[in-house]
Length: 262
Image (cartoon, rainbow, N blue to C red):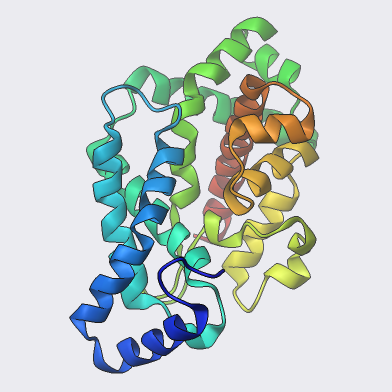
């Protein structure tokens, strides 16, 4: 990435200097440079959220994530700051949303019912639950099931920022940290050294192909739901449903894993 205000070479020099000196003027330069990234992430999170969630508030939450990213970024790891910062910014926004508990109780309950239905079906059959099977398990018809998925689709993003702790509190892994590019979905490539990360990657790889693709395109490739629909040749509302099912299915799988290792 070549920034408009800072050349890549100059930015690399600034990072080295900042890591040594913690010069606040350099930090301010980075904040100004990457402020548009905060607005971009906040805009993506804002899509599908109810009207009581203000975009400006999301930007404010995201700024804290950007500052955290600047403080913790290690240029020696040869990871682009933008890639690292997006996860931190998004995580800060989700953490704040979770703390204010903005999801209506009725929607949260419906999401839980879908998750439990998936757990029961897949526990019995050992196979991925189909939409029809989930609807039957919930004793509703398929049309009502899709209506439920549409209602809870705006709440499903939070789950990906849930943190798994491995070792001490400094070693944190979220589901987002394990989502890689399509070329890197092989666990042998994505797993570095952490057994917990391997479990999360395994859960992601067990998702139906379309649901896995939606996660990769949305969180890694940064496509909008509309753009993903064009890639997969389905409607935007269908992409939203696929995304929601992927998150709920992941949450169910990871809940089982947590039980097994606790």
